[in-house]
Image 1 (tube, one colour):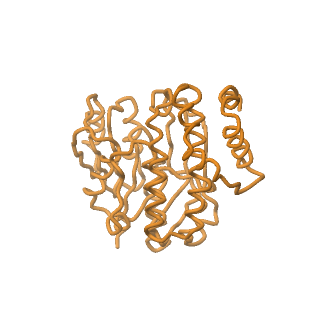
Image 2 (image 1 turned 90 degrees about the horizontal axis):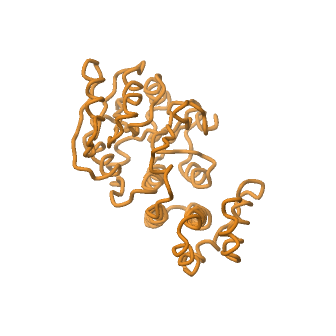
Image 3 (image 1 turned 45 degrees about the vertical axis):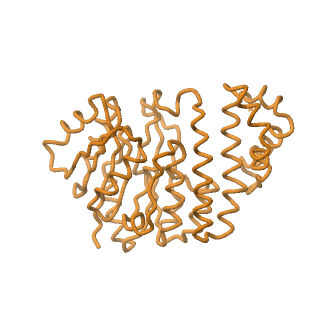
Length: 329
């Protein structure tokens, strides 16, 4: 087996940002990798900018055009066209450290071809101010990690991971036939990560910052709450059904049902309360949603879990009061 890596980049109208992403790829200390850019029906100069930067380099790249189908469909296209053993997903408005590929390939050899490698990242503003930083515990790089242990710690937020902070063996995806859900715009990343960890028997964490996530002021996440974000609850439900079907340990299923799902609804309902009165009232009258909130169980009383618990209790018992004070809690 080789330690080859394909970098898959979905692109849709990001001409303001793509140059930083492409330059970070060009500046890699190890240039032996494949770049697959998926033009997801861009109507601006994103692709032209990428081509101009790449054409006079020795980077192995290809650009695949498709009609606008969303980031999930674009990533699926990239997976199918990959010729490498490992897959790395990079969003076109983010960038990587100059040594990312070098570090990853060294660790692939060092740990004898793991199924899944995750690493540290920093979330930054356009002024390079650090909003958040995360490094995996050194314990995850001292030995191969149990996938159930990683699953549990990802689901209870002890491990922070996003679509651009890991690589995965392509065979894990194709052999188990799990891809991104094109119909889901929000939460599709978490659904994929949950499945990826579950199917990976050999997992390693690297205690280094290798990825930089740009918090854009014009991104979808920064704008007014979009009710389509309720798809994230649907994605989590799909993950639960999938894991149950594949005989996941009950502890993992319990964390989804009694921790992640209630917190997902807490976030969605809280955001709805700020902008959508009628929808908020409708949600609070939904017995199925209330029952999901009531399932919440504290994992660590000395963490934010206690605050989550108190918020949920107030939301259930006094939705009108909760709505009035939501911007202050």
